[in-house]
Image 1 (cartoon, helix red, strand yellow):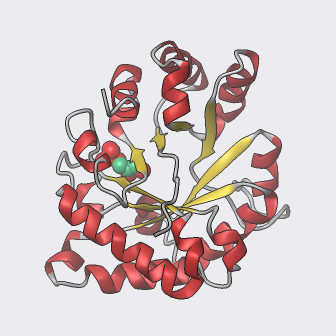
Image 2 (cartoon, helix red, strand yellow):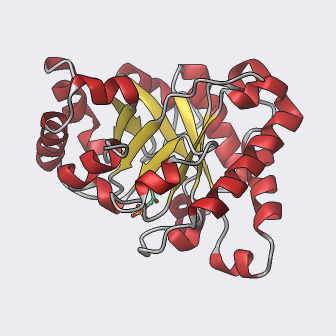
Length: 258
Ligand code: 13P
């Protein structure tokens, strides 16, 4: 049996919270709470709003922090007349390592469909930014027993025409919509089953590359539930919203084994 060494990835998605000054404080405080052995064990990322990316990048570079800079979104075009948008090339220039694409809030409030998510994922890869492709079912879909079907469509559509050689670098985030910001996280055994199902789908299409894909869980992850979720073999990290805004709480999520 091949045992894949997938380094856990914990990303704090700050969503639309805080000025660039608050972002500077937040990332500095987070760094004070982590030591080298934490970074050896877990890859750490923060996803500030666009207005804070440059400030966070400056802190990360000046203090030589092992914290990855993550964007919350991007546009698929390299440049052009797309008022209000930001390209993957611009993000790459700012030392952004990862970009979340297809977050449920973007799907829900900004009408992003799998085709748009796919274009964004491909643009990110072309610019050397690793997409974190977010997928997840709504409560209504779950109660109708449609979870697997919905995820199958989202994963298939979002990853369409991405060559298998690039797939093992990808990150997928399984975020059940009903668990986001509700304080109600998925049961770890259910999350494991669902995430194993996503990996099996990637394996059907891309073979062994599926063993390299990191699949994160997101949705009300906090210091109290993170260890049980991370104990599951297919859960490779977390996309943490509310609990990432406070550096103490996020640090406790990152150090989930302690
Ligand atoms: P919460 O952790 O606040 O539920 O948010 C999860 C999320 O949407 C991360 O992207």
